[in-house]
Image (cartoon, rainbow, N blue to C red; front, side, top):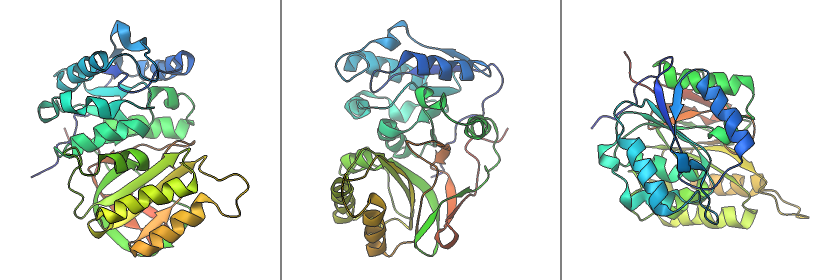
Length: 300
């Protein structure tokens, strides 16, 4: 079964903005929205700015908004306002099998939506949410729009460290480590057989990274994937410790024996380059190079 790619975006195409997870900072949202508005025609519900505790409004509000966006036949993309927490709560109510060929864009907690779409073999974009797009450098913003508009493979990304040398090819799957671990054992996890696994996280101390990684190991993830791409692990240090998160991740990666490179500019830091989940990639862990073998959107 082939993967379904989103349709390419063109100037002034209609796009939708949703808030499926946490409430967000309005000034940074407005800047991100302005960047999108320079190319496309975004719209959103008037209750987008609702807030209920740590969520962007009630589950019913967020679910209705996202279900409408997923099945909208004219909108070419769905931009998430922010991550945070809350997407997992919506999964049972979403018409995932009936989703239109539009590009879902986001990261962090949006990993739950990416995985659920990949369970239906649909390509989506792991990239800045609108509140994060506003602080990204021009080269990331350019890559962001190019990925959405061009069917050509984007330029390779370079990491900083080789943890385990070797080559791996397969569909790029994954995202935020904490969210990924939480979806193991649910029907919203796609098949990982032959995949190249992308992981990143923020604010998780080293022992928590170890715990989640060990969860993946015990669940058999590393016996199914072919390689591991590690993005940024931002603010994941133990104060006063004589070790860092990189030390822990290196040791854990080496235990898998899988090709693994780290330090790719993907995640909660800056720059946060967009990547298309579900598309085939080649990881050369020996040179910490991630090559994209296809584009993110359909050819004309």
